[in-house]
Every structure is written in structure tokens, then in C-alpha cells.
Image (cartoon, rainbow, N blue to C red; front, side):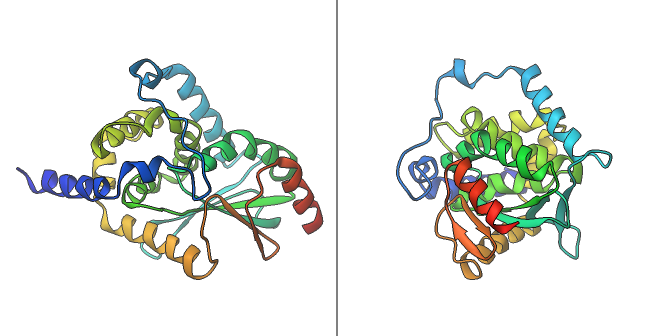
Length: 248
């Protein structure tokens, strides 16, 4: 067995030790993931996913209305913090987990409304911070951070909006295979994927971002939002709009 395979197996054993039941449970507040294990549901429409990724990538283009900033450390490694919107706008921070079903629900149903009303209009910028809650969560959080700047947010968007397509399986290896197949549509090759989830520098940054949430912002659940110095777990667009309007 090669050193690379030994490392992969060690990573997967660590993920398995965390119990997949925990990863697929609700984000600290009840309810479960809607992910399915059927082969038919797991098979995706490649064209539809590609169109979705390209649409998001267009938003990240320098000529687009929405600026996306991927924050990196002194060594050029992505930190797990991405800012979407006008740099001079008021800031809302979101701590989210890529394996959190409530985070996916927010991203699909509420975030587009916030973006259209406040980010696209230059009033608000969202700083998205990865908050890995488990060993498997740490691994999947590494994946978007290995992409080029113009692909980081599209991969995050794809992972959350298509969470039910990859977050299911008998074990950690099957889940990672599902994810590798999904993000390959963004141009992230399997070789890059495999190298990424073994990159200690990337893992260190994922853990450091979680520690910021725990130690500086007292994050105990995902998704958690911070606006105007106040933390909250709002679930409706109406509540978000009221808070944002008050902060403007």
C-alpha cells in the first residue's frame, strides 16, 4: 500500500469514527437531513449542474456586479472565509457547515432573497465562514479551499445547493466519492481533490476558522449569523430584512 493510500485510509477512518449519524443529523436543533440513498436520486443531471455552476461563476467575474473575495493566509492558502458583495457595505457574517441540512435549506431558500434585495444592490456584504463540526465536515470543508479564486464560491454554492446529491452513503469513502464526482463539474479533477483532502495546511486553516467561531464569536450552532454585533439564528427572510434595515 502506498503512503498516499495509507494517508487516505487514515483520514477516512477518522471520519468514520465521528459517526455518520451525527454528520447527517440536524445542526444542533432537531430534524434531519433530507438526503437520499437511492441510486436514481443520486444520479444528477450533468447539464443542469454545469449551468448552475457557470451562473454562479459569472457573479464572481471581475466585470460582474457582485465582488467575491477569497481570503488567504500569508502563504496563499484559503482561510475558509469568503466575502460576497460591495466591500464598503455593512457586513453580515454567516457561520455555516457544509454537512448541515439547515445551512443547505437557508442557502437554497433564503440566501437568494437576501442577495437580490441587499447584496446585489450594494447595501450588504456577506462574509461566509466555514464551521466544521466533525472529522468528515473538516474533510469536505477543505475541498473548495483548494480551488482557484473564481471557483471557490461556485464550489461552496454547489455543495450546499446539491447537498442531497453527495451527503449520503455507507461510509466516508462513498460520501467523498460522491462529492468528488459532483465538484469535478467545476473543473476540480479527482487528482486535485485527493491531494486537497490530504493537505495539512488547508486542514489547519479549516480548524483555525472553526476556532475563531468557537473562541471569538461563541458559535454553538449552524447556521449562525452576526450583524451589527449581534448573533442570531433567523430562519425567515422577513426577519433578515428587518435586521438588515435596522442596521443600514
